[in-house]
Picture 1 (spheres, helix red, strand yellow):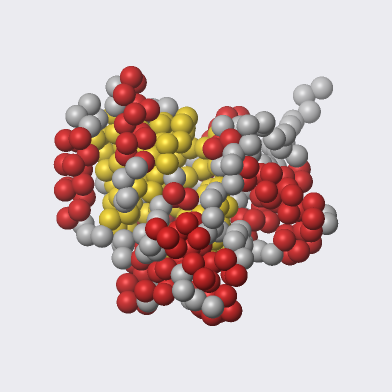
Picture 2: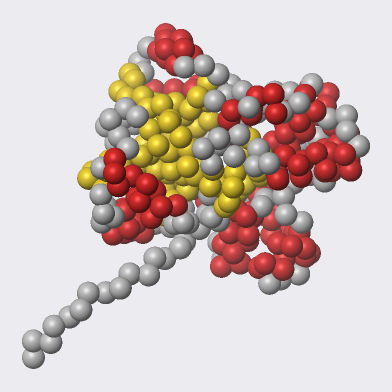
Length: 347
């Protein structure tokens, strides 16, 4: 699928990665395209399911939530039914079919540790066919998908897109309006302000200010995702690592700086570091692992899992070729409706 993206496509995608909500009058000239041409080319890529701009919880919001990874084992005959049950859950952000002694690997986003426990104990473990789960709560983010780049633009072209807005130092209280806007942005993070305002029921000027404030406060991160095969990085491999506590932060940041890195997170489990990478070839797994362990000798790789297929990524539903074919807006605050058990009157 790599040939589906031309050099112009790659440059356009890189520009949107750097400035996810910039107007076409900014993005077009940065990649040597007329703004109208850039917009039309982008819409063709979206229509083919090759790209999407999505929103994820930013670092400040992640500290208020209870994100986690979850290993899930199920009977092979029940796997499709388990996936179907999880697919529409807005707190199940990602679903990957993996090898390495497990059936599925999930990314969960819950509003609190209590909500996370409820999601796992009553929403996942009780599904027919589920045999075992193992939870890895995320405690620190060193790098995530919004930092991954195609590296198709020159430095001067990157500078023309402008600097990223400065982070606000004051925390921003999270209201239902912010949560509604987060859900609206999950559908399409490049949606015009007028469309977002209509969804959340407020004026465009208020919505514009709210989006800017959420970005500045680190409540949201925006990222332009591209189909792995189309980008030329078809292999997804996740690592579970063990690092001495004194080296954890430095190791996590060092791994986050690697060009192939898609995520680097501290987790509260026997493996205390999770790393996700996109690679070009299966042979890169052993070479890359050797480079990592040589540069960071205190790091021990406890387990590695190669993705067989990504079914859902940060709310985007993907087909067998990795194309986006639908979206379930992320909603960490979603409350599942559970029917209470009948109570027998003993009076």
